[in-house]
Length: 437
Image (cartoon, rainbow, N blue to C red; front, side, top):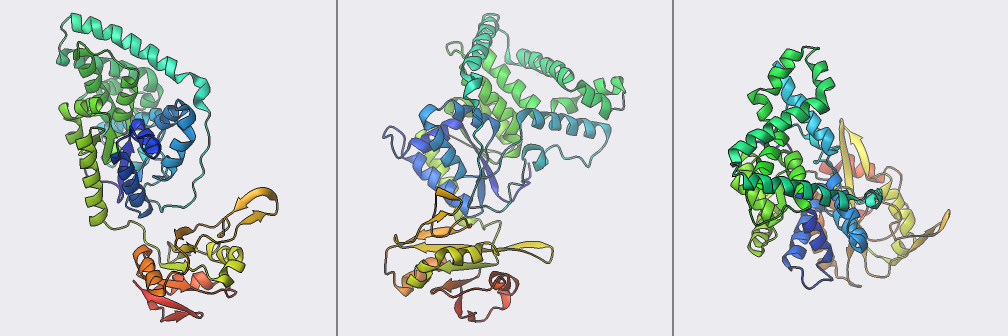
């Protein structure tokens, strides 16, 4: 399948995220998880990839107890894009394929907005607002155990009856047709203008069989129920199948557990959707690391600022830090020639930068850059000029950058001028030096 985004989209199984969150404090966690997290974080900040979050992550996180806050923190450092609610994605798939069955070839069943609530290629922001859904009260764990228990009873009957995979796959597809009609009858009837006969032709057609979540779910469930005589169905199995069948067509990389990864490979699902697949086995973790390192080295950022501004920890700047960063931050984005342009702002922190308390919130402490969108670069005191320039050239994602090395009052149009005239900037601008990367 052709890529529909410029950034690669990564989906991490909850176990991957949990192990990343525990990597610093739990010696039993493989060190590769920490390395993978660092690479994903680097790729996210560099505008090269995004790790998507979903409803399933929220549910899994709610079951994580004391680790919950740490997991949420790690997720925020890897991506700011959410996948849509699973039922909505599935309905959109059905309606898109039904529309194509009617002859509307302009409909793309794999359009990225079917799966995502925002464009994954959007610019990365330093701040991300997360709402605690408090899903702990819904008793998901017990419900999963009940589902797994019911499936295991069916599993034993099917194994005892020697039902083949192909036979069970047909049964699963028939169940999918029935469930589709129960859940989407009114939507489909509206699409087919009340023509129930034509609607049923779609339900029984080869086009229906190609709907991704239906086809993938039927394959995985049929395989699970007809194999593994000595393995009982686990509470996580149905959830894994839900995740994969719903979101796999919209992602580029999937990292999951060994069992489900092997099933995806065996059934040809990964190759059907051109997915790079990794799991938690040590050799596969190393392959994942190699994959990310090669990708980050060979790819270019999707979003690039017009100019980068580096603010040094000069004593005069420390005295007026809040005001300076407020002026820079509140004017760092402009709409020029029908395009959003922006300046990346970097603040050097030598360990002695001031803090501020908001006047209306005495308990709220703000860092030296206040509430602005700033990339912080921690350095040792008394960094040499050559070392400073070297850091700036390495960090800057724009072709030119400006260094603010002392405080002076800036006009409201200071950053706007940098953005608007970045290609024709001279060696200095308002008394500050401009450098070429």
